[in-house]
Length: 568
Image (cartoon, rainbow, N blue to C red):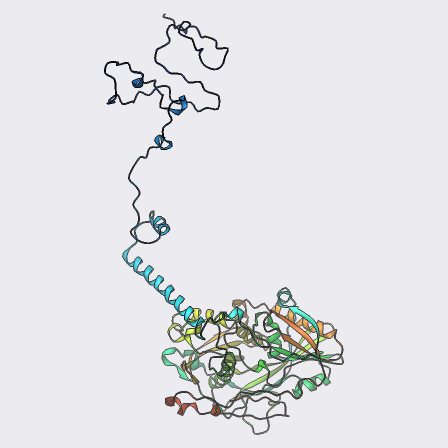
């Protein structure tokens, strides 16, 4: 067996590698193999390159063993101390062609779509349509922002006016942010009915089949009177207070304002009177609580000019008229009525009044505190030989450009989208209507969709649809928590019961989500000047073609000098 001789390995006492004079010690050492000293941190290169190209034009044919052609020659490699090549010489591309550049569009969009499958033709068309729709919506927003000229401020920066002028002699007692209201919770047992007054007409179910295609003209009820009487001017509440039936007294409109206060944007105020051990929640004559806010929680600003038909004040007055007329039109007016224990406490004998019933109900707040509130229902319907109470309210459309949803086009096919838009733009108003229906224990709440005949005609309207909801289900749909509602009322009542006897006013700050309690003189709000809406014959009339339909109807009656009768 042939052995393999390794040979002698010389020792280099001066450093790494073979000694400088190794030819004598290494007889088998090949010639022309360069060697470069290196350290441990150096990167070692190739030992031999057998793929070298020998077709070098500078090759010396007389010396076929030229060291420059040796497979062991690395004089050009910087690892062996030779002449270093360019930094890029060690990099080689698989494909030397540059990547193709897009013919149009930003670079990031091209790179994002490189790995996607080619779209179908119809998908491309739909994508272009969506982009065009977004661009159109953007232009519309810019148009609405610049309608009032110059740089119109956004809704968030709008400056609202306080509902009541704060006098310098008023003493502010407390300031409560809405953030504390959202954490409150209180459960009350089922209420008991103390008294029912008034008379109700039956609901006309044919209005449930109204659609934008067979719309109905909104009528005007100039002969029917509507009453907005405050708590202390109610003779029934005065009688119940004398009988010590409760400790706290209010109306459903005042309670719903308190319960839904965290959703409010506009300023409002409630007068609080502490008389002995009793507490009365009142509203001022001509208060904003008698009107209905429009686009209160919308992000799009409304015109600030008070004379504009689309200003916040003008729309509130218009919405109040629409709501009252709608509540009477959807009834069967054949004289058949459901009467209760007592007649309407605010009507004079022989006077025609609107269909309304007042339910005086009592809730137990704690062992020694009860609350009595006057609640309203507008109609009755018989279902399975049982009478069900209904509340009736109307949402109004004044200009589709502000909401972005055209009711005449969307109500039949996308009614949910219309309701979602209204919940966004009128969250406080819908929440208050729901709270009033819950307080009255109404079995159904009817919401009507009423629109102008023409966007610039605020006198003539049409009913486009009527939808019914169960109050509790609708409250859950709009995220209205009844425990939180009563928690807010209970906290305000507990705070006011600690006050001394006197008169106070609870004011919603016009620009901040908070309420303030002021102590006011006993004669405050007694002789205030109340600016009431002008009768329709004195207002600016619509174009001539609608002049015949723009007849005004104003019926203003005073009941004990305290009644507020709104134009029918």
